[in-house]
Length: 99
Image (cartoon, rainbow, N blue to C red):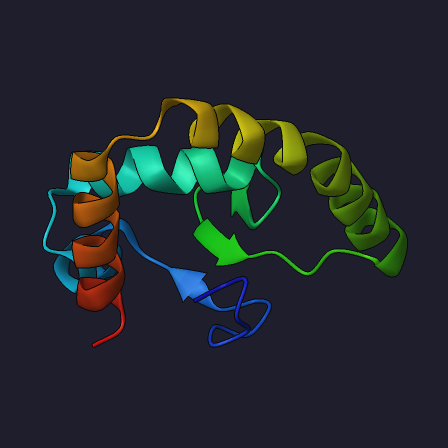
């Protein structure tokens, strides 16, 4: 939702709401928000919570440049190891997310 811009920069993301939205515990939601913060998609503020980040144009360029370098290697490694069962599971996941 953040990457697709369905959540606007500055939107507050409470652990409880994120947990309810994805049907996970607050502990799992907190861990996910921490990972998103590490990736620069979310910023956290002490005693205020987590918010959708609003990166500067230069920060966005740096992130996309890094992804262009890293992701082809990840895709290649995944293709070398993928099984028929993995493809079935992946298609099921895509169908579920497409709802």
